[in-house]
Image (tube, rainbow, N blue to C red; front, side, top):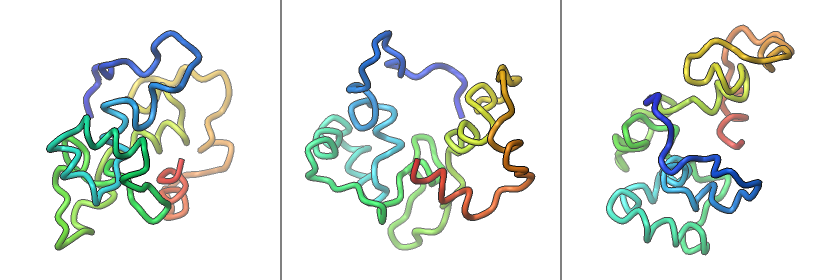
Length: 136
């Protein structure tokens, strides 16, 4: 994964979150259901509108594109062999949840308390951890 900041930035200096999720061009590409990722790559702005207004549904049964390998996320997705590349994508979110935000990009931890992995004696990643990260 790239170590340069997202553009536009996630933190825009306000407490509003209205610019996040499917309203953010980079985050939307990560969250887009894999079944709609080809549409997203062809016309990101239109697909973001459809995600925001519900024309493209996002449910618990839809895996987000970031679970598949590729830059951009889901680039290597194949409808005919959907499991190829699955769970080989961006797991920064999982690292952020379990080890802390500063370690997600490989930096030294700046935490002032123990990370969730330490608090719960996690030494390996189990299927339930992946499932938890996928729905966060």
